Image (cartoon, rainbow, N blue to C red; front, side, top):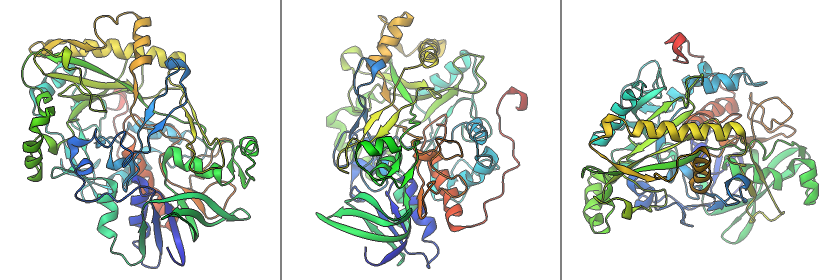
Length: 552
């Protein structure tokens, strides 16, 4: 961390790793990546073993361990939010599910002021550039990018029942949810390569860490950005219990939807009234900083399984040594994330595009690893994760003090709108219908969660309010655009009212996508790297994806 850097990237997470790779490809650019967490050591099985994904969540060595403020429409309870605090960020602890979202999501982006060239045609080339799709490259999928994507084999008979049940319920099977047609039931892509998690750090950063113009520092907490007037000239950080100052030609925040707005506010960029209440001098008055917070809320709908075909017995502690030995050979139940199939469908026929995402799992387990053993007489179970993708509930991220070590106040306002509640009732009823199709008859041992006691609209909403968890997809808190609440210039990723400061991460998404947000965030980082370097952008695609039955 000596001398002046051309680019300092704050956050060695998903977007930060991609940016570090692309910006340092030019040896004349001196690049520093600052990560608050520790290294993702190769020997750390909790990171690299796909099936161990529940272990880092809630562990202070891997997780920022955020909690929301009491959520009014969820009985006043706080919702736990895991975010990766390790090199690779949340890509080192997530479920490894790779979903681009629906092409219509990017068409919606393009209707926002200033985002005309962020439509699907302009985004698709960057999706293709970043991936190697092992199912085969084509006009929709890439074949030589850093992110190797395996397609779930979905060979367990429960996956077969899931795909068949979807058809029995009146839905289609699609070949590739990241290809021409997202809508339908399908096997899913995953960020797993040869039995190991392929995080953004392993895909983008580690292969280039030997570049002499690329530096990485971990366990370094950025306190605030430093300015001369409105020009960002570097940052102040704490490393090894010492306060250090780093100078930079440009600073790029890639700290995520919670930490990036926190750093902006600590540095005098945000709502003037909020900053004044904390005696923080205003550098740039941007009321949109920390606003527009979006997420996906989800529930687990779990069933007991009558046949001994689920993965549930593999959770037994006594099996761990053998499973570990298998994994060392890149095989066995630990070599997959088990989210090998799912669906994108409409909660009712009047919806123009799919508004529900399903992850099907051949076992019954929560993110924290807990199970409902007493409700599974055979010891076997299965479940789906499901929730509406386009909730119109919006929240905020706001610092509560000038101390950078104090976590910001996070409030999502989950379930606060009539549309949100209506979609949830539709979701539960539709899901039950699918899981009770004839295809599941050999396996259906009865609903564990929510159970028969939950039937009326009121009972459904009460259960959702008590039981729902975040899908861990926070986004939108420094959105790009050109309206009064926009924070980021979409043509440069620069923060309005400043020079030498950009934001590139999930916080810039103007509207959350239908699906896990890792892939859209990586796409934004890929495109942003060209904008930052002044490269000619990749030409827009002339391929037309499936949007509705009109263009199938």
